[in-house]
Image (cartoon, rainbow, N blue to C red; front, top):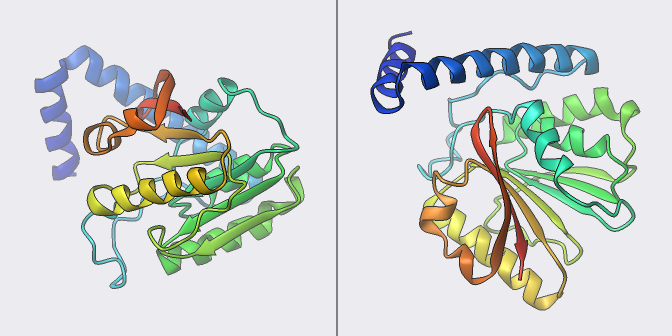
Length: 227
């Protein structure tokens, strides 16, 4: 509670009380929506997990917080999708919420990549419960280090909710660039809160074009397309 109060006071000082309370109201609404949507699907994806496993010692790997449902749908509404061709990858898939939402669309393939073993196992449990509602037949969760995992040559839609920064983010981005060079194709990246690290640390201008930036509950979500 002390930390929460401190964060609120800090935000009021930097952004003003009106904007702060609007954000609090929006996040409260999103949390209620998330709990209802989780309940409807019979899954549990909402609780934030800040305790890192020993295997995740790198401070550049961030704790788990699920992207809110509204932000995902907002971003997807701004994409022209060819269901027969789209291969969706969620980096830092956690408990599987975004993989589940993507799989409810008629995409060709959906993949989630997660480094934390206990989050990966939670994701598998949620997918098993929600699978009956999927429109995508090929859905997979992978327990792997994103820096070492090889991006499939047909991956076209990549999703990030600020899962890591620094050297980890740089390595993953370089892997994406290399994959596009080896298997030329258009790749689009959906990035929630890109202003935190992605647009500060990565020279994305060299290989990506920002197509749209949208205000959302999490602050901003941007969509980029490979050049």
